[in-house]
Every structure is written in structure tokens, then in C-alpha cells.
Image 1 (tube, rainbow, N blue to C red):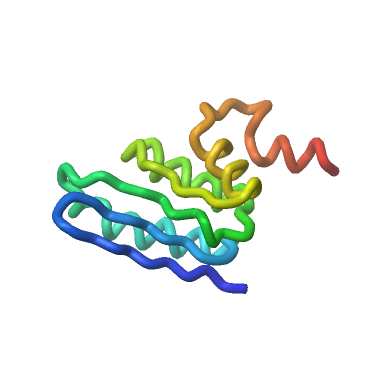
Image 2: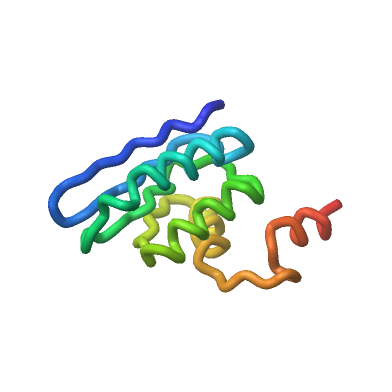
Length: 107
């Protein structure tokens, strides 16, 4: 499944709605889209809507962490998986707890 990215904007906020898998080229596309959209933020609040996200690989988590670190975005979740993803995004990263290290521990 591909990733659907929807930006909903008004004067006070920007919602980045993600539906599907944030992996590989789709993570790169999210990063590119964010690079284009972020300069226009000004003082608007950002929300990351992960309620329809089904998976994120290490690259996807890196992009989400970058967005979160720049904006301290509110993260919307609806399932244990999306809550886990939100926890991964907002957690201070260190080498031992990186997504790559978690993948290596599972292998």
C-alpha cells in the first residue's frame, strides 16, 4: 500500500494526515513535502495525524522525528500501533533505542 499525505491548513494550524505505510520512497516523499511546506508555518500549530498509519520503517520514523523536533507537533493516534509509533517519534533518541537497533534486536 502506498502512503497518502494530506495537508490541511488554516490560519492557526496545519494538519499532516498520513494514511498507509511510511517506508522507503514514501518516507522520502514525506520529507520532501515537509521541506516545501514548513517554511510557510509561521506561528501555526502542527498536528501529525497518524490514525490511519499502518507501518513506519526506520526512515519513516526519522522523518516523523524531524518534523516533531522542529514543531513539537501534536500527534493524533487511534490504535495501540499508532500510539507506539507516536511514542517512538517523541522519545529522545539514542543509539541503543534507535529503530535500527530495535530491528537488529529482533533479528
